[in-house]
Amino acid sequence: MELEHTIQAAEILNDSRIEYIDIVQNNDCGSVTRVQGKVEEFISLHQHELVIAFTDGAVTENGKGSSACILIPLEVGYSVIKASQVHSVMTCSLEAEMAAIASAMECAVEYYTHTELRNQSEKLFILTDYKTAINCIARRTAMRHFHVTMSRIRFAALALSALNIVNVMAWIRGHLGIAWNEEADSMAKSTLQKVPSMSYNVITFTTCKSLISKQVTTTWQQRWDRSVCARTTYEMVPSVAARSSFQRTDASPSVTQGSC
Image 1 (tube, rainbow, N blue to C red):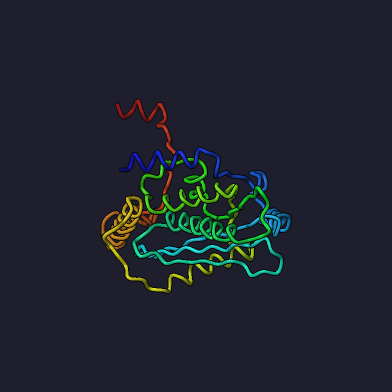
Image 2: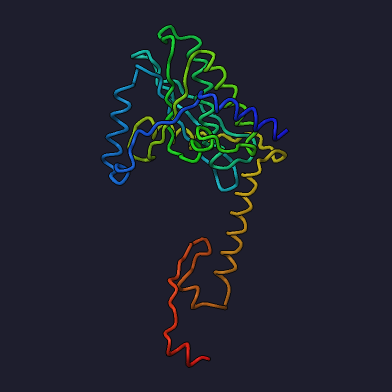
C-alpha cells in the first residue's frame, strides 16, 4: 500500500503540476526590511491578476493541530476566501502546514470552477512560511508517512491540472508584518480553540516520532534538573536539548611525552 501511494504521488508531482519559485534571493535574506519589501512587491504585482493563497498551521504540545488558508480572488472588491480546520487526529507541525496547503488547493479548485474571470491558463501562487512543507511537496521528497494529507494534495493537483491551473509555491519569512500571512497565522491559532472529538487510533509515523521525542526530552530535562551529580557540567549545559560544540585541543608534545 505504501509503495502504491508513493508511486502515485511521484507521478503527480513529477508531471510539473507543482512548481517552486524564490520570491526572496539568498543575498536578501539577511535584511528583514528588504525581505518584507520583496514580498509586498510580489503581492502588489500579482494581486487580482493571479490567485494568491497564504497558508499556515499550528500545533499544541500534545499534538492537537489546525490549518488555515486565505485566497485573494481575481475579482477586485470581492471578499477573500478563508478556510480553516482543526484536525481530529494527533499531528505534527509539518503535517499541519501541508494540510493548510492542501486546503488552499482545494479552495482554489472550488473557486476556479465557478469564477468567470479566469483565463485559459492560470497560475495559483501558494505562499507559506514553512520551507520543509514546500520541500516535501514541490521537491519530490518521499511522502509515505502522510497518506491522508498527500492524497488531498494529489487529487487537488489533478483537479487544478484539468482546469489548466499550475500550482506555484513560494516561501516567505513569517512574522514580518505581511497582513495576509499574519491573518492566516492568527486563524490557525484561533482554530485550535475549537475542540474536535480527538481520535487517537490514527497517527502518522512522523507525528509519533515527534511526540515521543518531546516526551523523552521533557523527562530527561526533569531528571537533569533534579540530579545532584555533575552540577559543574549542569552549570555549563543546563538544557539537554541544547547542542553544544567543544573545540578539541591537542596535548602539547611535552605533556604527551610525560604521560607515556
